[in-house]
Amino acid sequence: MKKVLVPKVRFKGFSEEWKEDTIGNIANITNGKLDANAMVKSGMYNFYTSGIDVYKIDKYSFEGEGISIAGNGVNMGYMHLVSGKYNAYQRTYILNNIKIDRHFLFYNLWKNFWEFCQKNTREGSIPYIFFIMILVTLKYLNHILMNNKKSENF
Image (cartoon, rainbow, N blue to C red; front, side, top):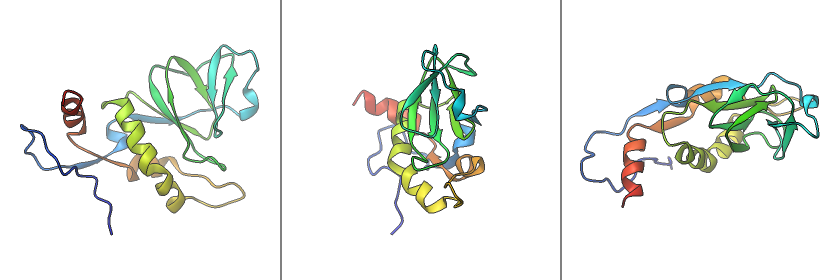
């Protein structure tokens, strides 16, 4: 049975068909450039790796609100809401400049992304996911932002 992401309830004023688009069209997707051993205990900025823990580092490469996605290892697919100035491990993907509500996207991905990762993992000595898998395969429904904003006032 195919999981349907179209809501059963529609608010007045939303009569258009639901359309799918890729995550790459609603956010910039990039990855960190550093080795995991670049972390420092007393660093000034958060450093996101393919683990659950958040470490520290002395320099930042990203600024603003976003979502980090662990791209390999046992915690592959694990996500953090990120903000401020931060940096990322070379196998950690960063979604930023997000055009819809970031929290809504985060929880939507949290609910669906783990299963996606398990089905689409590339196996080696360490399991991993490809950038293109995030860019092309993850979907969102057009009009989510409008319906989400409307539901906040419901």
